[in-house]
Amino acid sequence: MLTLHHLNDSRSQRILWLLEELGTPYEMKRYQRDGETRLAPPELKQVHPLGKSPVITDGDTTIAESGAIVDYIIRRYGKGAMMPAQDGADYEAYNEWLHYSEGSAMLPLMLNLYVSRLKEAGAPLHPRIDSELANHLGYVDAALKDREFFVGPALTGADIQMSFVGEMAKVFGKLTPYPNLAAWLGRMHARPAFKRSLEKGGAYRFA
Image (cartoon, rainbow, N blue to C red):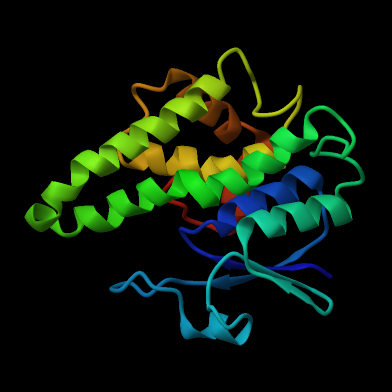
């Protein structure tokens, strides 16, 4: 059976959400961050050498990258749901959003997180980071204009994968200029499957 190795306050929450949306049978093993360092426990290294989350195991298959996990679960267990047909007009846009989330959008958000910890020493870097945040969040907001979902007429893996981007923007107080992104995030958090994922996954500070 597919096993999700779930770390609190991490990207694995969106994998849990995906599994709840699909109704896929799964097991969940919980891991807790260190209360002081906020790092993942060393036990995760026994699952994958990077010691990161999310990570899934499914028989002899182990996958540790969010986008690859979303893609794998939908292809293997989705029964045609939550992704466009590969020969359809929406597939390339769908695939791009899967990669864009971590490949581009999360970089300025993570830089904002780490540079903020430098306090005054990080001040010279903030104008460039803010410029990149505006560039990417503006791009995402424009893509959601007059759209309920990122791709097509229904929820797809693109929405699952992009959820952490919206959540981090909200945590950093960056959503106000981007009403389309803010409204989309509210719709995603209101979904019954998302609420179930919070109940099963435990405390998640980013919802």
